[in-house]
Length: 546
Image (cartoon, rainbow, N blue to C red; front, top):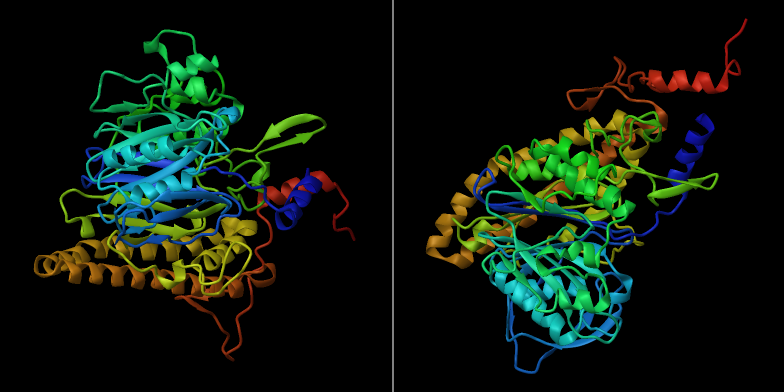
C-alpha cells in the first residue's frame, strides 16, 4: 500500500489530467434565501478551460448585421447568425437586468447531436444573456435560436434566473441535419432549492401548468418516434427518455445534488440509497430547505468534498498523509481487470472559474445583481463582487495574453492555481493559511456590501450613470485587492513551507532569533497514522538498531 501511495503521489505531479465537462449548479429560490434574493451558482469544470471574466458590451445594431459563432469549448467556427437589433451588457454570466444563465452538460443520447448546427450550448448562454431582460424571455430567445439555426451540442441542463424566478431548462438535439431541439423548462418554486450536476433531472412535468412549465411541442412525440418512450403522456420522463441513468450519472453527478440537499434539508439519509445504487427512485427536482440560505452558505457549499458524510474522501487511503480532498482524473481506473472509481464532489481541481449570482428585485438592476466571482476551484478561490452594471473586465480577470497553456503573473487564474497547486500535496498542513486569507477577504466584502450599495443608491437617485461607474470601479478594486492578497499568500507559503519543513510565524511575521537570523524550523514530518502505516508496510527495514 505504501508503494502505491508513493506512486500516486508521483503521478499527481507527472500525469496530465483528462479533460471532461463536469459542472455544478446550486439554486435557491427567493423565499428560501436569507435576504429575498434569488441565488444561482456555477462552477465551470473542464480541463483546458481558462479562468477569465467574459464581457459583451451593450449595443444597437443595424438590420442584417451578422454574428460569427464559435464553439465555446474548442473555438471551432460554426457559422453566422443574424444579430439582434438591441443587445444588453453582459459581465460574466449575468446581464444588466440581473438575468443569470448557467449550465451543466448531461450528454444524453449521442445520436442526437447535430454536427451540422450553428449554435453550441456556450454560445447559446451568452446570446441569451445579450438578448433578454427576464428569465422567461431568455428561454424564448434560446429555444427560438436553436429552432432557427440548430443545436450543435449534446444534452444540456441550463439554469436561467432573474430576480423573481429561477428555471431549469433541459435540452437535447434531434440528430444530424435536423434543425431544432427537444426541451422542457420547469420553474423552481420560490420556497425551494434545487441543483443539477451533469445529469438530466427533469422527469415528469405538468404539461397543463403553463405558468411554471414550458416545453417543445414534440418533446414526447419525438421520443416515441425514436423508440425512447412508449407509455402514456403523464408518465413521460424527459430524463429517462433522453439521458438514461447509469453508474456514472448516479455516483459522479447526482451525488453532488445529494450533497447539497444533505446540507440544507433533513432528507439526506432518505436520498442516499439512490446515490448508492440501492434504489432507482430519483430525488425530487426541488425540495424545501430546513433553514434560510445565504450567499455565503452557497459559496461554502461550492467548496464541498462530502466532508462528514458517507462519501467523505478526506479520510481514506486515497487522501494520502495530509488528507487531500482531491483525486486524480479520470474518475475510474482498473486494477487487475476490475474497475474502480473515485468520488466526484462539488469542488474539484479542474475548475476554470466559479460564481455565485445574487439577484434582488428590491433594488435597481445595477445595484441588485452581483456575480460573486472567482477563478480556479471554489475551495481555493476568493469570491469577489462583480456588479452586473460593470462594463470593463478587471485586469486580473482578463486574459491579456495568458491562456490555459500560457502562464502569467498578472492573471488571477494563474496566481490562484499557483497557490492551490502548492497546497494540494500537503493539504491539511497548509489549508488553514489559505482559509485565513480567504475568510478575511470574503468577510470584508460581506460587511462592506450594505454601505457600498447605500452609497450607490444615493448616486443612482441623482445620476444612474454615476452609480454604475462607482460600482464598476468598486468591482475592479476588489478584484485587484484579492489578486494582490493571493500573490502575497503564495509568497508566504513558499517561504513558510520551503523544503518540507515549517518556519515559525508570530503575529503574521516569520520569527527571527536574537541575532536577527531566521528562527529554527519545525520539522513537522508525517502524521502519526501515516507513520504507523509506513512501519506496517516496511517492517523492520528502517528500524533503528544499536
